Image 1 (tube, rainbow, N blue to C red):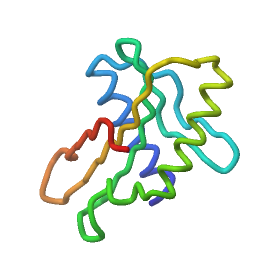
Image 2 (image 1 turned 135 degrees about the horizontal axis):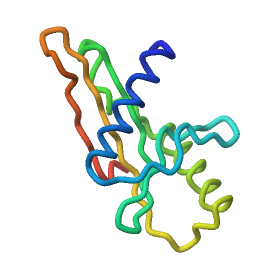
Image 3 (image 1 turned 120 degrees about the vertical axis):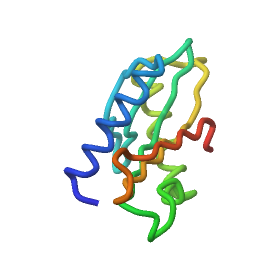
Image 4 (image 1 turned 180 degrees about the vertical axis):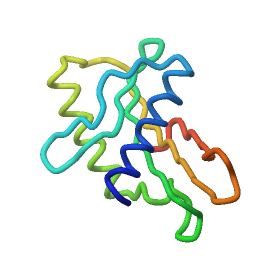
Length: 117
């Protein structure tokens, strides 16, 4: 995936979550070799969101790219974020937002998977 395509997907994801009442706290939070695409807050819940986008379903669904290894990395980065921001004791959730761009559709298709892992 090109950097431009990834940034477009993250822009759309940020808009998607904002439209649904989430507050964006961080975008592309990095710790060591890992990164979390979006860190959000809604109703006192801290949400770590992984954004995956595909131009088609030819190579599978976007959410299938969030492998157990990727989940482990996201959890590790989330722990670092919580320590750095002093968020101990805050309830958290790990979501995936899958975005599929299909040639025969004018708009991308969004699939939000709360509590994905």
